[in-house]
Length: 209
Image 1 (cartoon, rainbow, N blue to C red):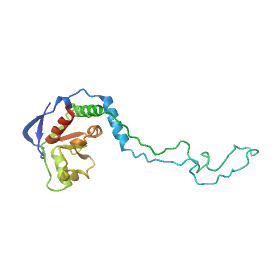
Image 2 (cartoon, rainbow, N blue to C red):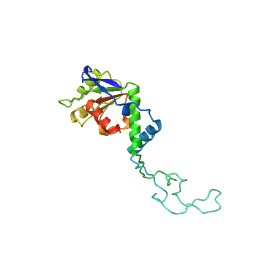
Image 3 (tube, one colour):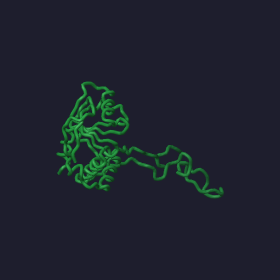
Image 4 (spheres, helix red, strand yellow):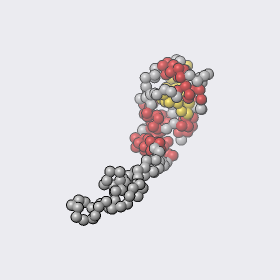
């Protein structure tokens, strides 16, 4: 698949790049995508939730009233889960939600997500660029010139660029990452995928195996 290379002003540079079929033209595997996205979201969870059981509640252990003769149900103490302020039965405990996936499956998921983007013509290739200063309006102007200001965008750079990253950080619909940080969730969550020529080369080297 051949794509025209644009500059930061949204104009054609005259150059064209070939999106490798082995990365952007495979038959997408939906189950691989599901597993990779599930892992990504699970790894974001802190897992610090905690509720107190009856042995952790502060309170008296005195028996509330005599066992028999009251006409009511028997009760052994105020910390019972049946009473207001008592311990919680089978409440949440701290845990680690992360799990592992094979590298080949994660690679397949990323290539599947990229293939969906290419199939829907939602990939824009830009020449490598830099901002002289950190200004949000520079990035806003970039998205406006590319006609992607009203959609979520994911800009993938070949190498870390602090000026570009900081210029986009305050924008809700914009995210900037490097090629080695690319993940399936971010690709699918973006309406338009913006790739620099440097990022495209890095992705091809990493995924075209």
